[in-house]
Length: 474
Image 1 (cartoon, rainbow, N blue to C red):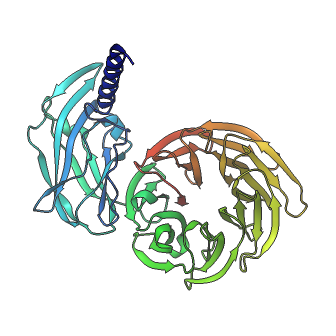
Image 2: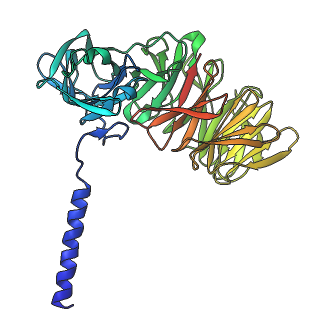
Image 3: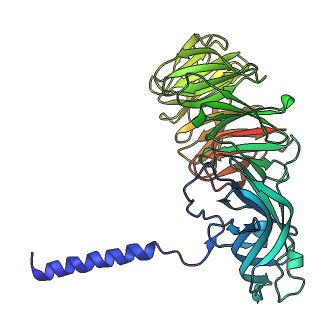
């Protein structure tokens, strides 16, 4: 190699290193909606989520850059923001999750805000407002007791009109209070396993109203409103956590013997039995929720992927991706009653009017089966369908690979519409009262909301953590 060529290659390598370093530098504050890198999660430290809302959406728009929000236990100030954030009063109006942080255990009684910049946007003009040079400090209306396993939300209410009362001086009028979760009605619960948290969403407003800490990676959920109970599968603990719906208080922990890695949970409508899949043992287990005892178990085949209780057939369905089968089990003994061959990589299973619908993930199909007669047919849908949900005379298909939700007519399997929602929609739930369909984005960090009447995307609720399961109570 000549000296000239070696010099050229060396120069190129130095240039590449400079480009790489520059690309890693972030300038300015974080735009709203861009998640900051999350510090390594520590399951023993309490978490606080900041929920910001503005009181008046009709006010002139204010663009605010928050340098820091901190709380004090009387000895030290602890940051609740990972980095500065720029927001507008219009963005704050519907309410959203501003940030989330882990903090040391303790009792916190004060909060302070450090404002970097405030700009008034009115009639196409921008006016720079004078912000306080020092942090503005307030006492909390109620002290916050944070201990191990707690994951709660702090509500920040920004009074935009009051903040402009002495313009061009900007007044920091952001009140802070504890989360306010309505009684058990009109709520959607979303599990976020990576942060040991269940978020609660008000379905009338489509905004987060609170959060509960559930240690052990909370995955699948089931509510029994009549008993004021929420069952949560804590996968890492091999347990079913029993929470009080009205408070989030943990009432019981059902430890599941012999289960190594519980992956999926389904519960019958009456809340009598829980059915679990364990991919480590290829087993299905039935747990009596009244006694907490293991009532039945069976090995069903290699790598069961999905389980559902089929209320109209009074059977339990298990899909086996590798063997391309759906098994129908007796709900008490878990003995196999039917074995249905289906298409490639079956995922979600749904029973509607005693017909069986299967999402065939790798075949990009939904198939219809009549287990009694053996008749079947298939329909192409979006890429990688994973979950199915029936509502009235419609079946919704979560096309995880296509970032869409398909709308099908049952029986004919006619595709009426494919709604683009982005990400990878997976688990779904319905709020019939509000006419919403909620779908968790298994690739992103939020929940998408569809209008059931227009079949259009209405909004996206950002969680800044990957959601898994959804449960709605009316």
